[in-house]
Image (cartoon, rainbow, N blue to C red; front, side, top):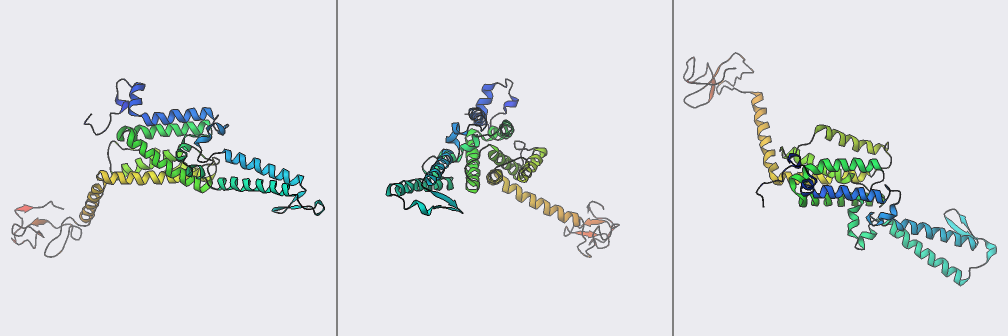
Length: 337
């Protein structure tokens, strides 16, 4: 096993072969390939039923509910019921329902309640053991530009993070961000959503905080990238780009930023932060006064024409007038202002 702390950058590889990229970026490439295949299979969202197992909740529940509701309404119409505000009432001239008719309506109503309950709980399928649905919505895309831009950003962030952390930790980061962002979106607006953008914002948040708290040439991020990602986040909230899963973006970013902060602190970022504080405090003090006479308290700011010296006896700083040696120069002069 290599003793190097990180894997080599494939961009520095002489061969630059697909095999080298696959070796160093297996998770990133896998996600790009699978997302592309899923998009082709579903015709970019035109045939979502072909990827029903990837949604947070089965979309067949919607079809079942609509079918049952249509059947229920048709049955009510045949039995002489007519809409009345938010309910159905039966015409008075129809007489009482036969037992078998009432039983049939009751059965349909029971199925409708069950279907409505499933629709109201986006985690229903996950609670039944289909845990993969918590992360697989990231593989769904509903348009060619949706796919292209998400894969482009995944490649940009994955190239940096998977290369430096290795595929295992990168995969853990992707799964954690995907699960948290998808869960928030599902609970907020239902299960009919998809896309890699929540993960991309998580990777962006991780890289941004990691680079800020623990500066390192391995973790740099272009200021233009930061500006674009933040501006796009705001634009999506305006509704100008259509229906967007904004909760996924925000929670993904916050989750990635939190993980990036923890990673930076564990890697020594806290010590860097403390050193910065000490440095800033020292700079602030020196900016106020570089020289101070221990006797009269004059400084180079209060008396710009004064010369300051360090006494041989007590090693404190004095102006020329109060120098203990009481002579025009000191044996250890300090910088002159």
